[in-house]
View 1 (tube, one colour):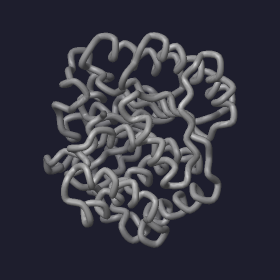
View 2 (view 1 turned 90 degrees about the horizontal axis):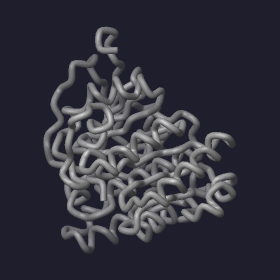
View 3 (view 1 turned 60 degrees about the horizontal axis):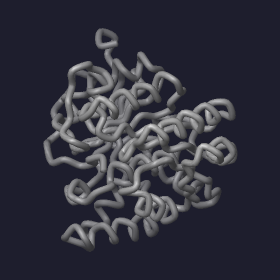
Length: 296
């Protein structure tokens, strides 16, 4: 759930000219992966039924320690010793939203970073209202969604098609910059070229493969991996960008070995396990620009 990769070509934005792959961020990606494998942080997920098994395996493959816990009676205790909290509304119920609020407030109190995946926001009133409630009541570190989901948080009448995006990353870029600034958070929009911004900095990540868009759960997996990188990197923009570069590179590696969705899904897990520090430093494709003053 949560569309990750679409085949539209990224268009030029009105922001300042982007540089080629940023060497600092390529090194940072490698360092974050190395720290993740050595520290093995606990990542607390309150996520959807569709992806629980796959995202847990993805987190294990890259070195993190996943836990799926949503009972009201334990979420506050569990998040207290987690490295990050992942909130995903893919198969939401009012009970689960209350679990997210309880866990999120405790995470804020003990300074555990939170990443929100507003799956399907804009499709129904329940999803949109729940995503906005989480953003309003909690201090969210990162919000990751597709373009339509992000637009639904910024624009009252924006719609999405189920959990799939009706818009391109560039359609939502300006709205994401404004929303990130307004909320004091980091926004990540995933698509053919991912965009990450805190309203000041803009990172674009060009790793990935089109097969990532035709298996379920890649968007949710990207969110979980961002949570893992947040557990070892205190800069949300850099943690998010390096996580997406890592995941996209894993998709590229998987596609070199598997050409169809079923085998690709397994090859992707293998790639998340196999990619080494030097490979990530050499393969991360992250460019950097800044927001022009007249766009703030």
